[in-house]
Image (tube, rainbow, N blue to C red):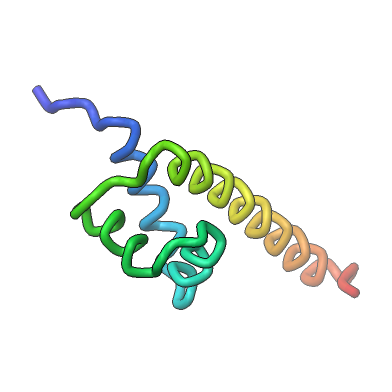
Length: 84
């Protein structure tokens, strides 16, 4: 029987996926006002973000998801000939 993932582990997995693009870790670090190396230590599992950073990461992930959705909608509209 496998041990269920902790919520922080699931959050960090989402964050790893969201920061796979070049420059996104630096962007996140600037947004959180922490050194980029701190973000890297969270992503490789050396340490975990504190409560405030965790809440900010959740907000950043939500913003990034909204940006991605807008990009998909624009791309779809362009394919259908309604692009700007």
